[in-house]
Length: 164
Image 1 (cartoon, rainbow, N blue to C red):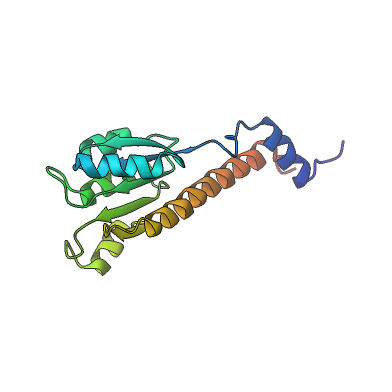
Image 2: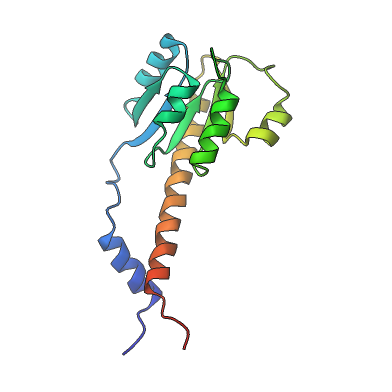
């Protein structure tokens, strides 16, 4: 009996997989304690993504699920801040990209933020939505590729023959 080729395994697994339709909107989470900002981001992003809204850091951490492709997270919020939320999200879902979206540029030293919290991006709320849209698109694509790669590795492990 011949060993199946890598290409045939990948094609078989691709046929078996229940990958989302290309036109399916990826689920993202927006966390901001300002209702106006949440609503504005829902309007901006709702045509492109399946948007879930959260009004606090605690609510945001609880709302992240296995299908969440990215999180847009305010930094300064009442109660727990966005830095806390990012750390909690990372503990539970280490591969989900978190984008800090804040009006405050001086909340902490930017290098310290990057080193401590490892955000996918840090976007300043300045009225220009292009940077957020571009960063979010890259984050979602990267997350989907990560999940696809994980699925393919698992498929290869399932089909691997034990050593003789």
